[in-house]
Length: 195
Image (cartoon, rainbow, N blue to C red):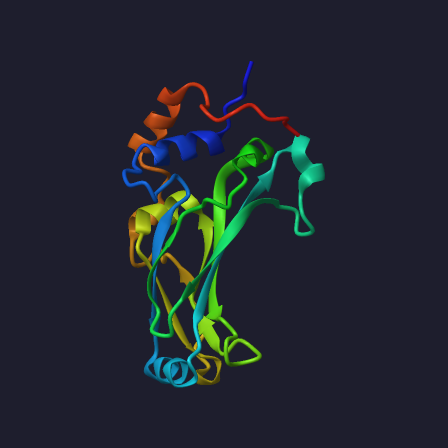
């Protein structure tokens, strides 16, 4: 008998909302905005912006041996490079190892960071807002704005999406998502060895 985890249910429910070919259950949009000083410096130095996403989850007790050095199951990730002016970016989740969903308890999570691409500077010069939380909440809040400033501007990065701006993010998954997950019954992904 195949076990369907909460992670599978969340993925399946979110997949039902994916309509375009470049969307999937782990995909979402971010919008990179820049302070005036950061915009000027990036343009002047012909620097780019890299957006990095890492998908992860908390291990089941049976999969604890697969956890990384910080005690999480690494589901994989992806990186995108944007031009100096920033703008919209679509993270697709295509780099995620979905067979590892059996190894996590609870919903999959994502950590997203933006930084200078080091095309003309040896070190990162940006301090950007970041994402770290349940993929489902990020999908509900998209597009998520990540604002960047120069490190020298001493602006503290902010965890996004912010629940004080969108109070619905403090609640559990919407009933429709939970019901779709319950109706799923079995996972449609291919059989692979479990933990």
